[in-house]
Image (cartoon, rainbow, N blue to C red; front, top):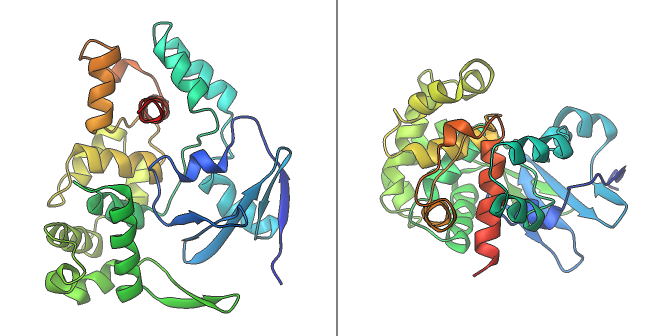
Length: 274
């Protein structure tokens, strides 16, 4: 029988927006309105109502892992107030209102790096499908409530699979990039050290030494896994947003410590208008 932890739902917290805004790829919402996915080698089931959040964990597990994973350790009143200070009145306020409830997650760094390598030139359904195939073929299998699940494979597991083994899963050119990431992380690149000791700029430079990892993939990894909330990934949607609302130019260095959260609001806002 699961331990179900009930905690008060804070302002600015919406599981639907958190899990469906493009920052993670292994969660799906079931017919029972419960989000379910695998993270840190275990199954997380999460749901909400107007008052509370419900998680299948103990209070100790929540305090040690899931509180930070779900971004519940940040005061988003303070975050939003700080973001507004760095923008002219107008679109940013609208973006915050549209994206209210998004929280930047703190995902497992290695999985996040690989997930955004896989995301290159891809759409979200295909990204999810490829990640699922990689996990199913090379991740450690475990059971939960009588069902089989798979942890994300380790760097060593991907190296053992080899580039051809990954290409067989239809990862295409990304297979070589995944192998390069696995080689780096098996031979001294410490993602937790990047999180704890590097500046955003130092982390960006380090991650970009991996074959196939450019500023966008590196910034996503820094933002969604490595506590660098100043990271500002730029993709097609954000380029379009900058052109549309900011005259084609936005000085990211002037946007403060939460530039990456502002980016998520803008990303969500622009996609919501399509």
